[in-house]
Image 1: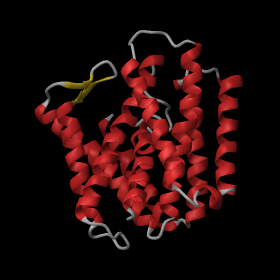
Image 2: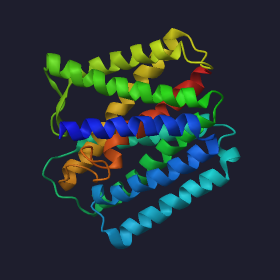
Image 3: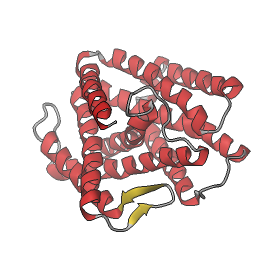
Image 4: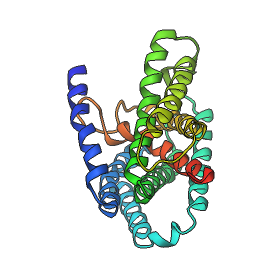
Length: 273
């Protein structure tokens, strides 16, 4: 299993970097929208919805939202602080569901309705942030930086958690996560964001700004990971799908990114960098 995971990662990372650096911004936005529709389809299982009709309804509505955002790109990006502030507010409200999670409670209609809305927020806000970052001046480097931040948080949390253990962060949702891992991931993200950001072309920001950007993004990314884990635990799924051998589904790979990217974009805007 570990060998399969490593081989899959070695294939996915170059593909992701090629998409960031070789595709034109509009092509990246369109390609990202098509890819994330896979995640939208996966979400119907997390929301305990039947493929037909509700999985189809969710997929159709999600596709329509992304098309509208693409067609009216100049309108909603003219003042991007507002849409990204609303996106982060929506994520904040969804994070409140983590505190209310009760293991063993079967999903009912209220859960299904919330899951339907959650799916739309996760895919729409994550895509919007990534596409907007790519459209920015030096956008490919900003996008690469947000990926490095997320990866650093994930790797840092894994190793510090294994090294120090201690109190669990969210035992009812993800028993393997610890507070030591959380703080280790946050510190790793801040350090890597600063170290990478100061050397990347076109990124003009003070070290403290980059550190804050990395720390906020790392915290949000942990919330995104736990949020998808909560859904998987509720419906009894180990993975969101089987698209990536050894890695599960698309949402298994991008859960942290979907949450972290809108906060990365908002903090970047608020600091004027």
